[in-house]
Image (cartoon, rainbow, N blue to C red; front, side, top):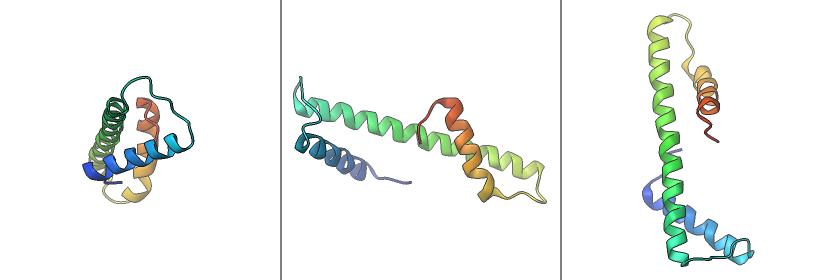
Length: 92
C-alpha cells in the first residue's frame, strides 16, 4: 500500500489518540517526544516493506526473463513477498 508522509503521520496520530482514550499507554517522557519516536518507527517499517516490494519485483523481473512462456507474475508476487518477509523477519 502506498502512503504519503502525511498519511503516515495521521495514522500514527490516530493510534496515539485511541491509546490515550483507552488508557493503554502512560508516557514517562514528553508525549511529543514519544510521538516523534513512534512516527520514525512507523516510517522505518514502511520503508522496509517498500524495499521488500522492490526486491520482490526485481526477483520477478529476473524470473520472467528466464521463464518467459508460462510465467504468472500476479501469482508469484504474494508468494515471493511472504517468503522474503519471513526470511528478513518483516511482519506484514
